[in-house]
Length: 110
Image (cartoon, rainbow, N blue to C red; front, side):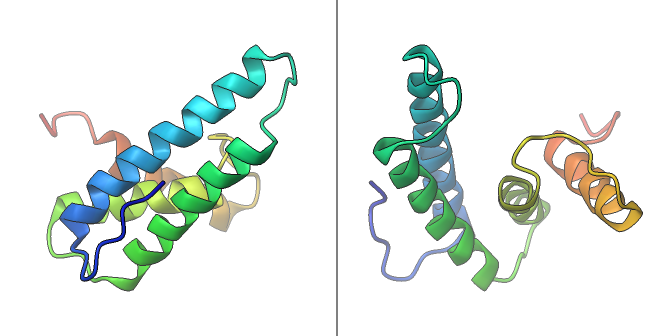
């Protein structure tokens, strides 16, 4: 469960995003391990809801550093490209490629 932050900063939300993202991955892994094959159920829904709330808060704040831009890209990737696969329409493909470049970094970014 996400710890409420009265006035969150993007740096604080980055920590919450990591926590919520890890909880979502763990709930997904439990679904797969239990033989359900796909992510669903109360624990998964709760994890996704918490991660969605964090993404909403991330969207509300302006980025001031490249780390903030990458955080926003990660939130957008989770919201818009949940399967991690490149979509077909050109505008969605370009958005996906930009987000992936920000999330993964470019060669030589060090």
